[in-house]
Image (cartoon, helix red, strand yellow):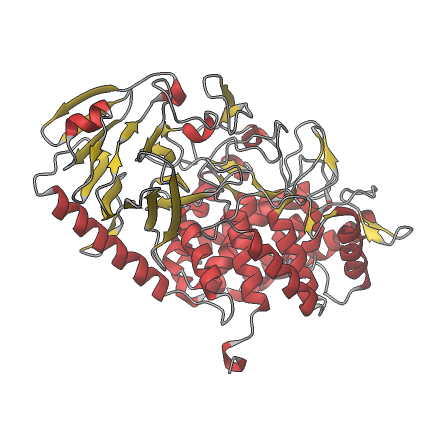
Length: 597
């Protein structure tokens, strides 16, 4: 595998899979994003050779091979072309079926792989080696005419294929004279021709993604980049729940040998404000509505209105964290973790995140049926928590595990919760409640300014009464806490750039309990770009934005972090936060369509 996260993602809003630059499928969970990674080679070192290697699916050719890889334009269908030294060439087409039937979306937990010769008769093997329980058990393998079954403890995969079954089972070399199809999914018979079934799934999926892309609102500039980011964001949405996960992976380190290996296959409320803005700007209203429905369920079922920072696809499920000893980790850099301890943390910014996301349903007429009195009452319950917690210690946006403080960003998000409640109340004609929330927000605003602003240093501190640097303070204008031309915002932005810049990129903070952060956090640089644009420094913002676009891997995707020295991508992948940052910055910076020609 490439060392710079040279991975492509396929999926269908129910499952996702990561494929490396040579067409090796190295990560996929079944039957949903946070399920059993039956393909886990991504987290078991870099080796996919030998009888004991497990958790991958590849098509090795004889001799040295060169590879090229790209998406079919404006789709989530991936093409990998492998060419052997003697000129034999094959194409692998990978996708997860998604299409519409009778007004409903069909997205089975299925992966389709089409393999066809382009030149000559390539000599290949097919190695299909799923595993179960994070490497703790091998599936029981049985076969029949045209299929192979891999029975795990909780899930059984059936590979239906017109390839020679014995050659697949025994991984025997054979010459590829004709196209073959492999459909890997639930344990159900396919009674029609495999070639016809695979072709129809491909064509229907192609049509879905082309229609999805055609319906997007995109900026005049950077259209291809935004479209790829939008497709990636869509792939991280879960049809069944409406949730949007932070990433498809767990435990890819934020930096080499850092131990900062976390499970991101869940839905963080802190992402909600940014994700909703991106979906709204893209005009992706169906995805937006489903996501807001998920957030609404979280709010409605929160005991006494107390919110957690992160939720599973099933909001009631436990995310108790544990380590998996049998997987060595990404490039051997363990540990591999399942679940996330942040689930149990106190993060007071979540009340603002939930209310800011929900505000859209009261102001966007396309979503108007959702802006009910009942929802407003539920949001007011969250507002009461924000009022009580804005001056209380918490773990903060960045989920510090061993220290608590009154974080300025958390305080500002609590203020934002009450500020938006005042605006919602005015919108729905509740004058008395609007006045109450306006008084509350104004009082909080004054207190935050008095406690978080350091007049001697001329900047906001990361926590009340301290002078630490926190990239989240770049959002003070975006959240409406300060106007862009406020000298306090300007000086804070300049200070954060001076302290947190590492090369052209920004870190979240200088250090935490695990030590100094060596990599830059991708979305923080996008926040800085947006702050520069708000300050009228558009040329500088555009130059930095173009630099961020150059970070994307060979198929246009971003992870969570970047090594400023090498440009190498680190952290879980593909990272929703990063792709959303790209979308929002592109929308802000692009030349308008009206002035494009």
